[in-house]
Amino acid sequence: MALASGVRFAPRALLRPWALLRGTTLGRTEPAAGGGGDGARRFGSQRVLVEPDAASGVAVMKLRNPSNALSLELLTELVISLEKLENDKTFRGIILTSDCPRVFCAGLDLTEICGRNPAHCAEYWKAMQELWLRMYLSSLVLVAAINGACPAGGCIIALSCDCRVLADNPKYRIGLNETLLGIIAPFWLKDTYVNTIGHRASEQALQLGSLFPPAEALQVGLVDQVVPEDQVQSTALSEMARWLAVPDHARQLTKNMMRKATADRLLRQRDADTQNFVSFVCRDSIQKSLQAYLEKLRQRKG
Ligand SMILES: CCCCCCCCCCC/C=C/C(=O)SCCNC(=O)CCNC(=O)[C@H](O)C(C)(C)COP(=O)(O)OP(=O)(O)OC[C@H]1O[C@@H](n2cnc3c(N)ncnc32)[C@H](O)[C@@H]1OP(=O)(O)O
Image 1: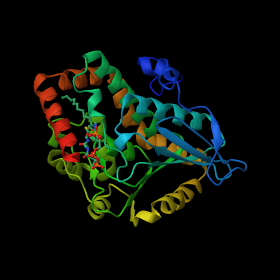
Image 2 (image 1 turned 180 degrees about the vertical axis):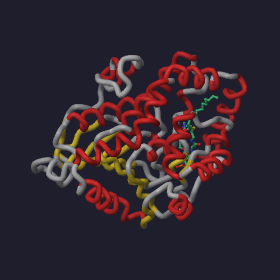
Image 3 (image 1 turned 180 degrees about the horizontal axis):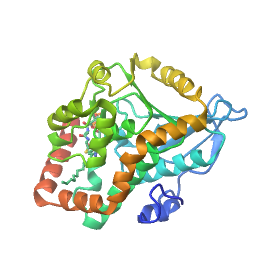
């Protein structure tokens, strides 16, 4: 598998991605609901469903994990699906959305870093870096159709797209709320925030751990459109058409020019970033607060 970073990244899951997917449907195609014609074959895995439309060159990618928490399996399946579409010259754009009611993506799967050994935490964080690098530098147009809550790691996924459309529901808040969990956004995530909403707004939002409701997210520039929930998909398609109206080579080179320095900064310090992450999350105090937070989430449900 070609990696966004070159040679240094080799987590077990990505060296043997198919092992994780045994018993899933990744790689198999099936007719899309209501489809059947050319370009209406969908494919997917347990956690990522891809509905490709060859005629328009646009694929809809739907996350379907519980709360779309970014488990190692979900990260792996996302990278594989993205790579599959990148390598198929039929496709020019992806609309990323959620198949889970009310949640776009709940962020890092905290069970992947709570009570786990350092080696697992390192493997997990490398998979997170890999997904971000691939999405941030993707040659395809990525539009996030945000149809649910979008905290922390969910916001990372949205920020790595080219354009964000958010459903107008006050419960669907978006932002990097890490500080409220007692954790810290890494520098590359901070850089992505600054690139999107500017330095002062990022400084405030990161320190306060702000989760923005739709109108505020629009005002600060975190999302590009806020629309009624039933129009998220159609608006994402209109945005996609606007981006695809630009010749690919010019848009791709411009995207690369805008984003390369940010991505390169992580590529230069990837191992150190992994070590920082692991030593931070494996601290007793951080483990205790993650445990307490997870417990609170579980109780809130009942
Ligand atoms: C100097 C050193 C520098 C290094 C620093 C390292 C720090 C790294 C920072 C990395 C950046 C990213 C961080 C993150 O992403 S942390 C995760 C943040 N996410 C959240 O805070 C969201 C938590 N979840 C919620 O608020 C709600 O679940 C949500 C609004 C998303 C959905 O609400 P809903 O009511 O629909 O669903 P439930 O709350 O009932 O949840 C359903 C089940 O899902 C479980 N759940 C939810 N979120 C998570 C999660 N993030 N991880 C694991 N599990 C999660 C929840 O417990 C329920 O589970 P059960 O069904 O089993 O009860």
